[in-house]
Image 1 (cartoon, helix red, strand yellow):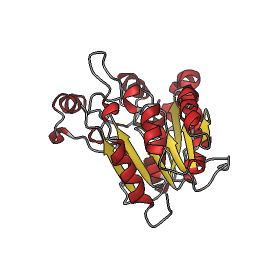
Image 2 (spheres, one colour; image 1 turned 30 degrees about the vertical axis):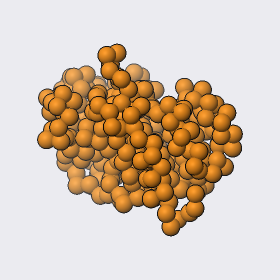
Image 3 (tube, one colour; image 1 turned 45 degrees about the horizontal axis):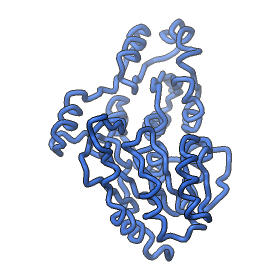
Length: 312
């Protein structure tokens, strides 16, 4: 029998994409899923296969509150914030909540100790939703075909500088690759960095400024993706595309490493101070750990992953 679930996850791009395995399991149980998100993330949420109804927090939350108790059987709050908790309580339905490990995370950031490493966030989402996860490949609902196939996709963006390599670091990494096989991916704010790279490596393709949907389509057809801690990195791992993930201010121990783990993944972590923050912010008193990421290690990982598949 179909049961109706209200799933709350306001933001952001990577966090929303990581709900995909949980949504898949809920659909297997016959759930009708309504997803409530912040309005600016609707386009990303629309890529999640299995969502039956997509609602905006800003536009729909008040009307939803009036009808939710009679329309849904349960609420799953994967945001786990004070705002989402208050909202879920007002609905007065059985609610499962994603618990944020504030103390453990603070201890991890302070001590850098593996003893405080956090469980992968996808698995914590599953615990909150009460589902058993499958590690099968995720398919996103992209309506646009990739304009390129079999390329090495390099995600040069990142929400904060603690997640981004400099143009000089990318030039060092990419100079050993055939330029015509490299696609630079990122958001509109990454255009300047892309231009700096292309000035020296003019045959690289610039795909910065594409939508999240277009970016995921490109990644789905990639031979290899190289990315910092970004939503595109999470999409790559979920789709089982070969991946080299790069870590500076953030660290896989925070629970946001590539999921599910695969043999076609490599992780390169800075030699600097990490983890420094949850989101990749670098405090004014600290140097950017991403600047101490070993580019030679990245180049070795590229050779290792592509060995036997293609020649550099």
